[in-house]
Image: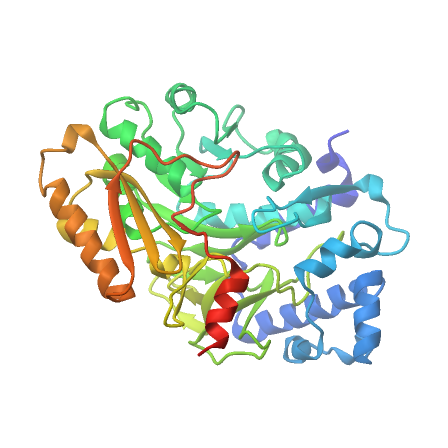
Length: 467
């Protein structure tokens, strides 16, 4: 039976469908805070029956009734990625939880052992409301627009779980054959053929996949792929990639920020390029290396609380591993007034470059090639990657579009400018190598990262300890 036809599930979903997408605009500050306070109290009471949280809360010496609202959230202990990994499966769900009604979904494990959590149908369907909200933000009808999601869709990954649990059952609400999924790591020509046949209005995928599609669009292979909106997630998108993609497709590209643990989009980039936090669904904090809250406007490590759902609760979770600069209140020209991520997501904490003089750069802030290409006004480079091979050796690999090799600034000029900007960033004692490569390969079932550091983290710590 389609779960949406069950009135216990279907009626709350219908109510959310009607009222939640516009909630950020509709509720005033007082009503929004009341909603968030109530949601936090509810999720903390739920978590108190989860062995992992129960043990942590008892050790901290308080009961759920001690939490009156968001202002009390700092009383709660942090939950780490390690906590969830070590307590999965039985201690990350309430005692007596019916596992047959849950879906296990896991992270990629790119920074170590995967994190696995339980989600259920109501939780996933609640997260779907954010997809409906984005339709309103980008002005497309989610019931009629032809939407394609190009992701991993491996067993247990969030996109596959959402597709199985929810999307496959929503055909009763939307135009038939308006939604398509495909694996991002199929041969690119197969992806192009399917997209040409489907003629999507909206494409959601990784930035690097869109960049590859943009390359072939410029070559004339994607004549029937003319979307109105492009969305990317999973990895940060640099300015050059955005410009390249938008130039090829003639439409805007927008970022969304989501994760397995969030079960939805924590942040959505609006038409003004502002990263609005969906703060009716999530509470976000930022901390320093010593787990102290950082001041508004200062960069810190993200701490996430999911204010909805069951299965495995996510409360003051530090395992997102992202650098962000949080502004608690920002009135945007788009009409939304929300907390925001200033400058978007600034990279994984684990993906960092450490230089011999003790300076640390998150991967996103160390990616400098796009600055050169934007300044030179060229789309000659189709892909690039920065690799820190040793503490004092950095290699920059560029893939050149042969059809544009002799158009605009020369390849040698690009190499010189890239070498110069990295030397200015790193200092004269770092060996900088810039070279052309035929391709930049992706790891299995993952996009190729923009920045790779082969410097062991413990070696980096030794350097930092000497400063």
